[in-house]
Image 1 (tube, rainbow, N blue to C red):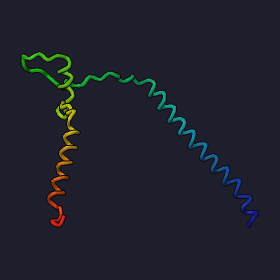
Image 2: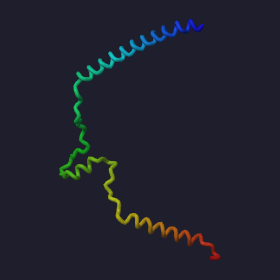
Image 3: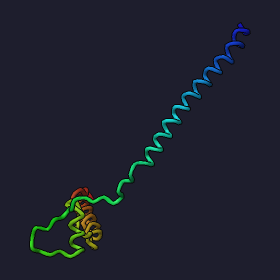
Image 4: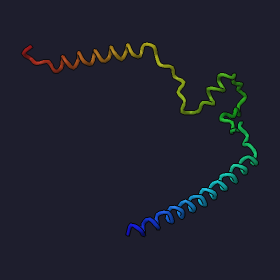
Length: 109
């Protein structure tokens, strides 16, 4: 049994090596073809021109800043957060807590 294996082992290894070489040669040919074809193709224009987001159909003239704002789209919020928003929120929360405590205070206190 050992003699048979010593004879078959090199034969199997040679066969696998040959198959791998053939496979890799084919892959290298495909890769070379792709690379040469890619070099021949024209480069895609990097600057693409999209449709204009805002088209003014009125007689109103908008300045650059207004046009940039309009071009941001309908989902854009132009509202600035109020400076006193957090103060109002804190005061309202404190008042709600005080009111809740007064409502739920035990009568014995």
